[in-house]
Amino acid sequence: MGHTLFPSDIHTMQLPASVVFAWLLLLLALALAALCFRRAWTILVRRNFAEVAVRQGQAPADPARWAPYAAVIHLVAGAVVLASVLAALLGLAPFSTWSSTVGLTLWIYLFALHLLARRAHVQGKRDLQSRPGK
Image 1 (cartoon, rainbow, N blue to C red):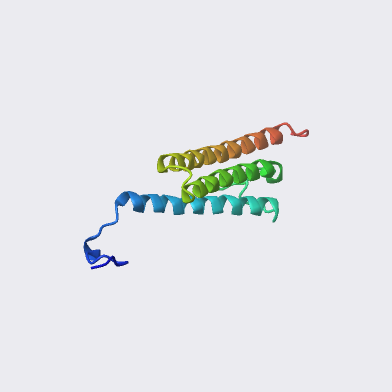
Image 2: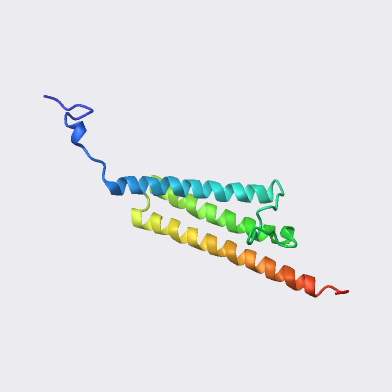
C-alpha cells in the first residue's frame, strides 16, 4: 500500500480554527491594503477630494489643503499592511508578528484619519472666524 495524494480518512480530517483565522486575517489585510492604495490613488491621481478629512458626513472648508496629508496616511498604511502580508506569505514573519503589525497599523490608520479630519474642521472654523468682514 503506497502513499496517495488523498488519504483514505479524508472525511475525518479537520481544519484547525487557527489556520482558518490566519487566512481570513491575511485576506482582510490584503483588502485593507487595496483600500488604502485605492484611496491614495483617488486623491493623488484623480484629484478627487470627496473623501478627504470627512467628519460627520461633511467635508472640510478646503479639502485640497488636507489632501496631501490624507494621501500620505493612506500610502503609509497601505505599504505597511502590504509588507506585512508579503512577509507572512513568504514565511518571513511568524503569525504573532505580522498579525500584530496589521492590527496596530489599522488602529494608527484610523486614529490618524480621525485626527486629520478633526484638525481640518477645527482649522476651517478658525479660518472662517478670522476672515475680515465678519
